Length: 244
Ligand code: GLP
Image 1 (cartoon, rainbow, N blue to C red):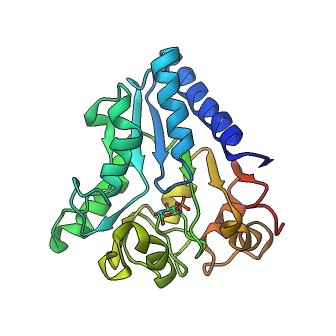
Image 2: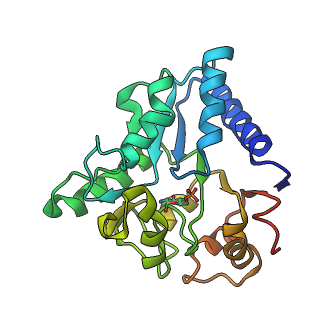
């Protein structure tokens, strides 16, 4: 779906999420949301915060699982996705802290594998993700599933692609400060979500979106795996869609 403005698009996506939260509330079931970081979802979070403050949208029945985190990474580091999520969403709504799940960038190397398995199991224990919000990296990554990721991959540690590190360099004040590794939900984890919405804005995403939407399904562009998911919508602005 192509919109003239990313703001208009973000408001509609936030509405879809709010409707899902309401529906689950009526059923007395938890609403399990997979959330993303990066600049793309910021306006969606702003709109959800506005709905909480002005329209009484409650996050009491919401459980969240974030896609990824740098490794190693302290939670209070301003470059952490932990910090990002609290800053843009969690600190401004009534979500219970026990319902927030973000891959833990502070575990030791020895504990890393088990903590990824535990993360995956925890998602499954809630019956899987009801909704997954995604951005896309210029490498075609979703979460931090870089080229080469397997379609059935689960939550794991991954080595970041050089392009991804270049794109992250400004916020780390130089590429040398960008971690080389991250923890990410797998492609399999993401694809098990009942509903997926990928957001992409701006001309810098146009080329990778052409490959993602019109190219062959390949592990070299992990986002192409979404072509084989039956309830995914790509929400784009006119610049991001300009190569389609
Ligand atoms: C990071 C995140 C991705 C995100 C991507 C794009 O690499 N791990 O989940 O999709 O950035 O970021 P942006 O939305 O800022 O373009």
